[in-house]
Image (cartoon, rainbow, N blue to C red; front, side, top):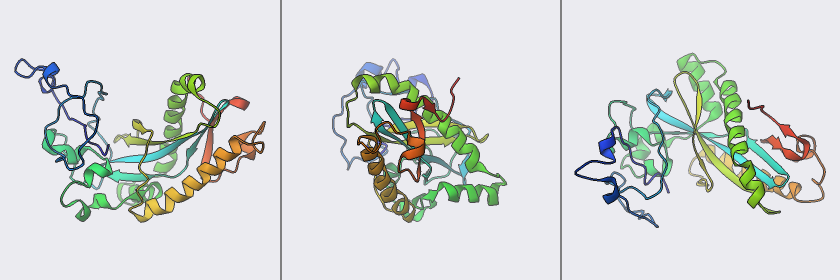
Length: 267
């Protein structure tokens, strides 16, 4: 929902206090109002997710950023999963400051682009310019002296995505039906030690193509996604190992249960 519903808290009284008990602040919101001011005080949803905040993120020109990558389940049984070898960078429009952590500071911390676009001067900031992972790799080498960032990044991303796959594998195989497929937009954050963490996995990722980077990436990926889906559910892919026979180009096999293949061994 474009980052709406995200609340920053830095002490328990922000959530529950004698004056404002938690139970009085819960409210079920079925539909978000797109015209709602993004920095308005919000009630808590009855069900939600609490994440520990990373206080030492790697910064891009002093702005926090996240990296959007894609995980693709081409077939549920036997499970066949790919990841896409390209992605893009989403930046905050305001400079990062770990000491500014109130509701008014959301634009420093929330990398979601649809949320950032609600800021008045968004298109005048660097955040409006989406950068590819290859562009980030060049930038970090030229400006930060970080060599081969991309290699270390993708190695960790594959490990994270594999854990994500194995974590939901049983449920997918239990409830999945022939013909089902899904693509997830997974947002990764990187700390200043180049450690990669999963921020969230979006079942309905944005397909907005408002920049040249997205226009170059998304149509090509969607076309290949459908080619792989048709292959995996047809006679062309029946009994065939995806690593050797599937029509993949930008995608790479992460898990192929039919042939006991895992791109990454998780301990």
